[in-house]
Image (cartoon, rainbow over all chains, first blue to last red; front, side, top):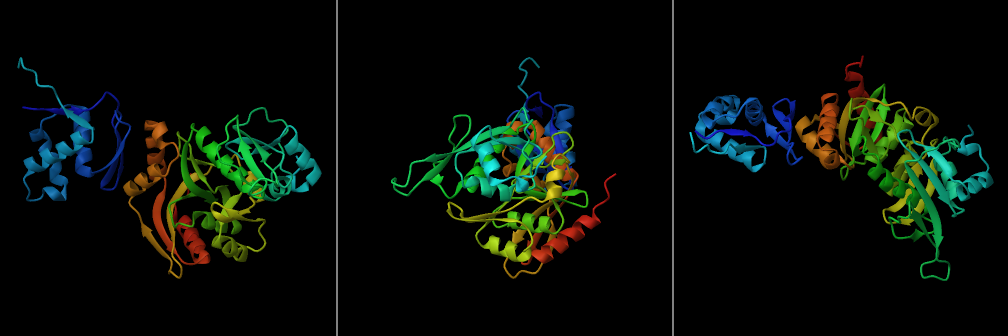
Length: 96
Length: 308
């Protein structure tokens, strides 16, 4: 199962303001404004690499996830975070 | 030390022509030399409460105003500003000496104070709390900054929100407040007893005048202010006063974009903006009258928690 992780070795920097978050990308030095679900996913990945399935429950607090396909939403969010350069897919270990 | 307002014009002219006038703005010092005689009375009026700091060993910025060309040259005599062999602007008409000096100082200071976050903003202190007003188009931040100062607020800066990287306090850089075009008459009527430097018509920004810093703002130029409000004002002629809460995340983006060195500072700049916003209330203020705006700002400051 594919896992995702934060990019770079720099510490993740976040400022949470109500239901929005400012995130600093330690690799590109870009700042991103995220919703709370995205920040939850980043914080989870800061603790350890994770699969989309294990991250899906984090989106349940987002209104967008109500009644929607959680797996699809998680995938879309991971795609956005990956495009923003904040996370990356772990290389697949062919020996496993 | 002697206030510049109490020096003779001859003494000030000699200082400018010789070893230079040393001015302490608070978070930075400048040495100013000039061979333009008309600059001395303009400086005396704009910086009347300041003293020449004869003992200063270090200056963040050193500038020299020089005459260029002459009456025979098309367009008449010009004046140019030079700093460390750099001439950042094309020469100005000779009569626009003080605006050239002020814009030159802005340009140079914006590049040289990278030990703090520099946000393009007007900043005053009221009842112990800093009010940061980012310079977005249509805000009237200089007019509002000037109006607040003439009603008792302490001037920190008309141009730079200087944010401490450790604790997000705002550091003063006390210099004259620049007023442009219609705002000059508005402010002259609003505060007829304040000291204004006479107008400079025909600049690239139209007619420019300056409000001279008051004695208290100069005296407290080394005293930082605790964050209080980040205010996004909008002047709308005839508008009723309106105060709205603004998302801090949105404010984060506006401050970062409006900073001179956010990208240079990287993670330190990110932390400084975040800490400033954590310690501040953030509002959008629409106003059609300066008096109403000042009342509303006073009310917002009075509601802030007292800082320990």
